[in-house]
Image (cartoon, rainbow, N blue to C red; front, side, top):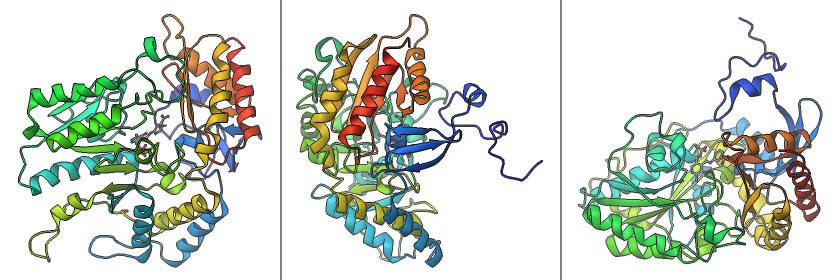
Amino acid sequence: MSNRLNTAPNDLGAFWMPFTANRQFKKEPRLFVGAKDMYYTTHDGRTVLDGTAGLWCVNAGHCRPKITEAIREQAGELDYAPAFQLGHPKAFELANRLVDIAPEGLDHVLYTNSGSESVDTALKVALAYHRAKGQGSRFRLIGRERGYHGVNFGGISVGGIVANRKMFGTLLTGVDHLPHTHLPGKNAFTRGEPEHGADLASELERIVTLHDPSTIAAVIVEPVAGSTGVLIPPKGYLQKLREICTKHGILLIFDEVITGFGRLGTPFAAQYFDVKPDIITTAKGLTNGVIPMGAVFVTSEIHDAFMTGPEHLIEFFHGYTYSGNPIASAAALGTLDTYREEGLLTRAAELAPYWEEALHSLKDCPHVIDIRNIGLIGAIELEPIAGEPTKRAFSAFLKAYEKGLLIRTTGDIIALSPPLIIEKQQIDELFDKLRDVLENNI
Ligand SMILES: Cc1ncc(COP(=O)(O)O)c(CNc2cccc(C(=O)O)c2)c1O
């Protein structure tokens, strides 16, 4: 067996790729070999505009100097330090920086290595918190249809995307789901938050009545549902969830793996909607996608509930080998520096109107049945090809790649989430290319 690193397109057999049509890919490989700011470079020398910030994570754009240098320097100074009973300064410095930009009251941070781990960490914190408060009967977790919370067993249990669940057996028991909020008949082509659907939050009262509040630990939602194809909360919906959770002593978890770190034009979606959750899960933009890292924000009420008993004892039996990893922490600090220096945590608010106009200008393209947007997120829903669901959007993905544009597709929905450094002429480039794709036989 050859040990040499051979990235020639005919040497792709060993890597079983995630969330990928492996056979199709390996017949027509799509390999990036470089990136800078808004653009990727492909293995065959083409430039591709990054319309998705990689996977919703490269918020500052590619190969940004402060981040690269922070990683380089840290790797030569302190490569690894345990976070169990030991520490290193950058993990604490980063936690303080993160708390400074978080919604008021989210004062403590646990580190993870991904969004999936952030979600499972949050669910475990919620269950253990109620136990610490003497309400161990609260074992239920409430998710939402079409929700995406990563691929660990907790996340797929509270998640609501069928394909992510159906292959994996019984999942966590004691889980229920809110209805999703997509009302195409009423809200099609809405700009920003839909007018209709806030009353769907009242379904939580029905679920609480069914199970009794004493059995429910937490509700977890994405403030803006991303992976399912961009579902934006109806006006007042999140506020209603907050009210009901507060009324019944249920923790509200905002899964902000996508919306965190400036995607909506505020540091977090919680600030955009002015709704304060008890826990926020993050990853992606935390390190600009460069080093795997996640962070879970919790209130002092939650944190302090664990800080009891003899001080030589571990208060919370949870954590990862790489929690707060020095190089990841350095990457995150370099990322926050870049966000701060370039105003990237709020820049999406400045660009959102221009983005919205450019996105909705595609309404007249063939097979477009809905367009949705908020901040620097956009979605174009296409009419499925009869009997071949997802194929129209996948064809658009392939054609866009050929034309030098990277888009995401889920089902027959095109999802867009460019780096927050995008300029107006690059927004024009993005939608000119996408119009070309949509108007040419996909
Ligand atoms: C809300 C949310 N929660 C958890 C995760 C899981 O994060 P990790 O992948 O780091 O474990 C996510 C990730 N979301 C995600 C990841 C990859 C692709 C796409 C897409 O929509 O195309 C979305 C997410 O969007």
